[in-house]
Image (cartoon, rainbow, N blue to C red; front, side):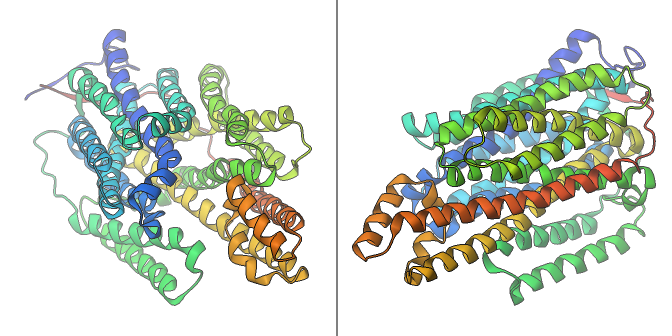
Length: 531
């Protein structure tokens, strides 16, 4: 590699338009790779479990991926700051696609769980490095906002087609193609990134860098234990083992805090987390993840299990939420460059998200589908105003030296927020649903049938419903009334759970007032390593 200093094409853009477009295509394919995987696999999971057996490992297909990815995001975000991001993006694409092949070849649930963990390492590397490539290419925030639309479009397309594509592949080609579909996207992203993405470094190539391995291990311990605690809490409750995991996470985090304050080149600079200009933005990332994933995760369950809609009907109602994230992001890029106070867009975004969550809370089986879709549309627009602006604001305030780790921290904190949201609201919904169902069964002296109603999936599967109703009728119980009581219990519990997301979003809206006025300006100090 020959190393030389390269002058930017302009103060706001490192490369000319054509080269910028080709480089961004590579990053867009990377974003599609991660987004496709997160949406396609869920549709195929029931079929996978039916073939491979091992239902006890069902949740771990998702948990193993999240566990390894949430750990690797901040680690490789920081390494990208030190060494440049292109090598890590290339390695992560190869690792992710290789792990996808291994997932498709799985002949047991254990194999699949291990392969998904490996895939999560690649996914974490991608998220930790690829998103930080955008400010490298476009130091000017105004220009970056326009180009960021490509990322929102790629994410929106992949998220929108993911569930349908997963169902199509599983039904007609077999579930293994849910993983093999990553190969062509991976090859395209590898080609464009290798050929067109420049190798940019913000530290001098001769600078001595000492890797903070103890810090990396402590990040692994603290985030790993926290992830396991959050994932297993709804099932096991606050048992002794769960409290042990929480204590281990806290101890590891305290040790990390002390270690990183004494090491010369910390992998996780805590100065960023306590910086008053950044700390509010990081907290908003946690809260936005909490509300966003609570809405995306429990609204479909409400529409299918509570309102009795088919998966296709529920999917159509959810589509505006996903599609309008892209629309909101495009509109945001056009509006924010023309207003004096960019923070206004966060006010609007969180207001719309709160209104969308409230719409879910007040909707019932007689609410028209048009009104429900309108609430989803509002939520999508709100997220389209929130997500890109939090990214831009954090990158702008962190500065070039901490660009990668700041972007990675934002992504990690959003993931942690989503974990907390789904776990806390999931625990609340499970507890309320179970209590209401037990009460209804007790009134009909059918307590022994609780196991049949314990999982709300009975309200979605018509085959299971028919079987259980026939058995209840034969046993002299009022099956249809009990099923209706279970449905009302699910509706009430989800309303209460998403109501908590409304409260969280309103708190986030109040915190926006604490965000310092962001000035969108450019600072360019970049070293290009030509290959």
